[in-house]
Image (tube, rainbow, N blue to C red):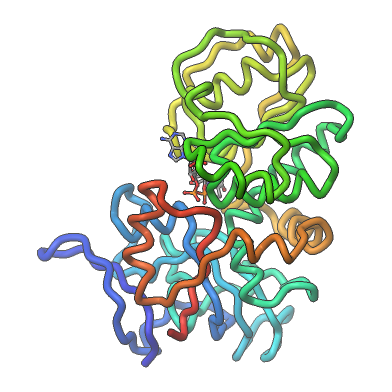
Length: 327
Ligand code: NDP
């Protein structure tokens, strides 16, 4: 038996509970992993609370990511003792996930943990931080460089936002953080933001085009915020859209794209090919100052993850939450 969070949906309703789970219940897969650390991402918040239909099979162990050690493998790439990290692939949605002491998955889904990170640090980064890196990579591949101008990061105090700020600042960009929590201005500046703006400046319906300001944008928020970010991006600038914290809608016009040559990149972490993941984790190892991780991370035990999930969705969590699955 092992400890894990199990989500059930039956006559008693939709419930997430910490409980003992039989090892025989682990799903099919060619690699078994002893999970050391997991984390809470926005999607885990949706899964645990049932606020959105993230979970598509029941019962389900939530947790879209984990870091741990391989204990058994029938996959040629992996051997017992290998340190691994997993993000996405429907884990925690259609396949049992990381908020438990054990996981069994397909070896093709695993990435080798970079030497520079321990398992706890990998989960302090988590899917939110890996997605922030995917956004930064998209903006770099677009050709943006620090002397092109300011970078806007929305949802700044959240997981994606916090890591994006730390990464962009380390790479030499001038970063403007958009937040609904002005009290977190010192936190955001300590991460590397040069300036902090109130998210209300971007959250309401805006004009098709505004004054050009951003060379690039990392947007974790969607909706009017994404539309306004596009409308205020400079000529031939780029916007990386990865999130929907404000909403899934995109009430925009084509003006920024056809009149200013702005490019909108869609960022998906879940099904990203292995080579892209490996590049993202390698770059995280190079470009993310591990000491920054301590500042953005709060640690909880598995039993606290259910309450923390609701806090996350209510915008009460700053930065990242790592989950010690052994307490
Ligand atoms: P968090 O909850 O940690 O952060 C989200 C932040 O968004 C909040 O901290 C808050 O920042 C801001 N926010 C919350 N509600 C609103 C609102 N109504 N209007 C405007 N801003 C709001 O989540 P994550 O950082 O983990 O994830 C961010 C988004 O990215 C989520 O939508 C998530 O689903 C998505 N995501 C997508 C991935 C992909 O593969 N595309 C992978 C990972 C995440 P502040 O208080 O500073 O304003």
